[in-house]
Image (cartoon, rainbow, N blue to C red; front, side, top):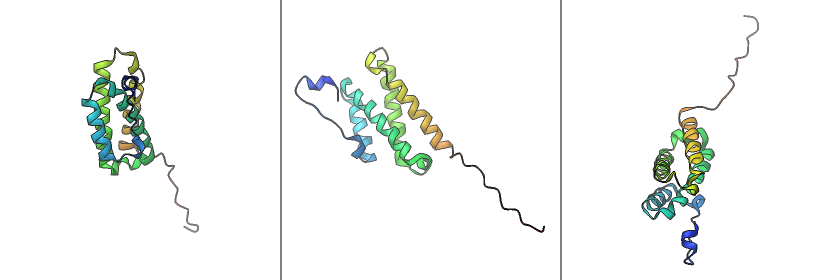
Length: 125
């Protein structure tokens, strides 16, 4: 959480790794419509999304809920970046956006690099 709320003696730390995908969807939606001070938490959530994508890897194709979460987070981060790109606190957001984009494209459309196995040769033929 950012310093905005710390000044008032209030601090909320969201444990994103322990949240389910539906909980993450709700939290990101609420943070996005909340005060601008909450946008930094969406950036933190973006790092957790990257971790989740890495965990499932090429299995992302078979995980429609995670795909929805990735797309929602990506859209929110892009909107925040466009709205606030003049603010210095948003320096790291571009890196997170591009990391999410590249990993999503790789895991969703790609396949692991596996060296093809040659069939054994049959002797006598």
